[in-house]
Amino acid sequence: MSSLARPCDAPQLMPMTVSSLTAVLAVEHQAYEFPWTRGNFVDSLHAGYLARLLYSADGVLLGYFVAMPGFEEMHLLNLTVAPAHQRRGHALHLLDTLQGMARDSGARQLWLEVRVSNARARALYDRYGFRTVGQRKGYYPACEGRREDAIVMSLTL
Image (cartoon, rainbow, N blue to C red; front, side, top):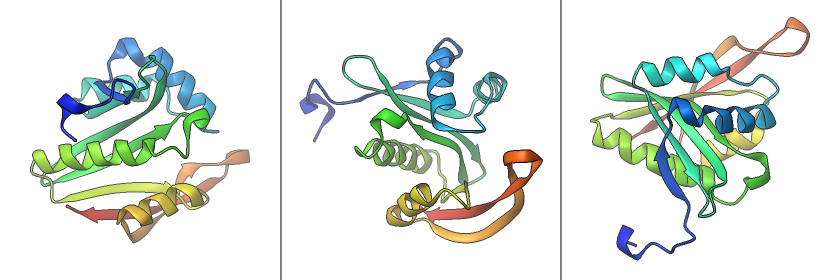
């Protein structure tokens, strides 16, 4: 479907900006026990990372992603869908967008880390075509000062 034929109620993508971070942080805190900080997002934006927001037609923030470009690769740092809007295809829409942007930038690989315990996200990435390529020990913060391993996944573009 061309963008000219897009239904008026279709979700809209927009660049993430510092002024949008209040809404982003609200979703981040709803979605995660260990959310990114405002500083994490500001630093990513100032570094020129790819960051997009997905809004409903009525202006509700559905989700977002932040990705770091590299030489012939893109590294997905954060992909989040608001808990109230999960399981509706928004993560796939965001991944499709990121994949297209990565290809357009000359990337040949898309990389990410995901918590070992995040079975839903791991299943989504598996279905999307990502393959597990490794594990990072103690990558994520966890309860009571512990750390949780990350699964490293890659998608050939």
